[in-house]
Amino acid sequence: MSRPLLEVGNLTAGYGQTRVLHRLGFDLGEGEIATILGANGAGKTTTLRALCGMVRREGEIRFDGRPIGGLSTEEVVRRGIAHVPEGRGTFVRLTVEENLRLAAITRKDRSAVAADFERVYDYFPRLRERRRQQAGTLSGGEQQMLAIGRALMLRPRLMLLDEPSFGLAPMIVQDIFGILRTINSEDRVSMLLVEQNASLALDLANRAYVLETGRLVLSGPAAKIREDDSVRRSYLGY
Amino acid sequence: MDAYTILQQAISGVATGGIYASVALAVVMIYRAIDHFNFAQGEMAMFSTYIAWSLMHAGLPYWWAFILTLAISFLGGVLIERVIFRPIHDAPVLSHVVVFIGLLAIFNSAAGFIWDYTIKPFPSPFASGGLFGSTLISLHKAGMIAVTLVVLGLVYAFFRFTEVGLAMRAAAQNPESARLVGVRVEWMTALGWGMAAAIGAVAGMMIAHDVYLEPNMMIGVLLYGFAGAIVGGVDSPGGAVFGGFLVGIIENLVGLVPFVGSELKLTVALVLIVGVLMVRPSGIFGTRVVRRV
Ligand SMILES: Nc1ncnc2c1ncn2[C@@H]1O[C@H](COP(=O)(O)OP(=O)(O)OP(=O)(O)O)[C@@H](O)[C@H]1O
Ligand SMILES: [Mg+2]
Image (cartoon, each protein chain N blue to C red):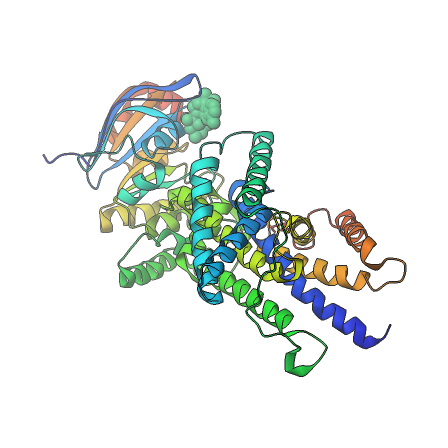
């Protein structure tokens, strides 16, 4: 097997004096979708933030074989990792179109950028309708679409998704997960997904990790994890 | 007092208002990038003007000296950000205030030390006399208005139409998200400082012909510039520019009112500003975004 796209070893991270993550280790293959399950405060968000340098971290992080653990957020992003953050990170005073345009400014392939605009608008027709509107006026679901659209405009190889279903109506959640599946299968974009809706996440993912107070306690193929008794009780609720 | 005098003063107010607008814009640009008022903006502009004076003194034609001064000021602004403000960017407000005031004092005394405190005349690139031979507005004032409008127009076009301008707006609005789309936020901040320094330099070079070159020449201008920025809305570049022009016009018209004259016009202008803020605390254009939560 070829080398994984993302390799994480002994990853430790925290805020100030408090350590939140303790020596995490996991891999993610090219084109793979992995999900991280865990209770509130387990450190899921912190894991994603540590990967792209938004919190102080130690340990090995390799992306495409090269170390990225010492890079600043913007440089990690420029290597091809798009983070769709908790809270969506909308530029509220820019228009929808400017939000998307912004994500493409590091790219040189102008014609492909134009095509990607169309693609994002095709995935999310709402965004096309509202493209001249101030992004702060979008609904929560529309802002989530915009956040995913922004990530797509970066043409990433890996997407880090922090609770994309948060606060959304079930219908919209279905749409968004369908689109994520398409992006993954058509463009072979790898994904690391953090999600409260464990059932949904396990449907989409190939692999799953369970995080408890900053430690990985379980990992395996998504289908296997779904069968695990403790996971069923804690995260699936049956 | 007749209509002609009023018109004359209003136009004159537009000319000085443009200077206040430029200073206000410079202040707002830095404010949006680092959330602090640059109290040294005026002294930086004054120092730039001295550099222009030296270049002209060395024999450079006006516009060459002008352009070279802009470039030097831009680099100086970038350098100040990188060397002084980057290391303290997490420091509390008071530390910033102290550093700004330190910078102000350093520029002020350095200018006095290098070029001494005697008042120097500063040339105007425009011919003397009135525009089209009229007494309504001098050629210098008309040129001043033209130069400020060109500068403000360029800055507007830069932010509105270029990718870097968009990245700077994004970085100022939401640095964390900006990083997540690959914007090098630190460099955007430095760029903002450079541009602010260059805009201030234009204001300094334009006003110096009227107020004469000396180390304290920008103190009044900075006050009016701050006032313009606050009236317009400190987080709104367009508002700051508007506020600057407004303050300039009010200042000049107020000078015409009997009993006020030129001694009290600063006071009256500031009273008006306080009045605006009592009605609209975030300034006229201070953005209150329509936002869902
Ligand atoms: N900015 C911060 N400063 C200090 N501590 C923080 C900060 N952010 C998170 N923490 C702490 O780190 C721990 C993990 O938080 P994290 O946000 O990673 O959890 P999570 O698994 O994403 O939870 P949730 O499901 O609620 O989003 C928590 O104990 C939290 O209190
Ligand atoms: Mg979280």
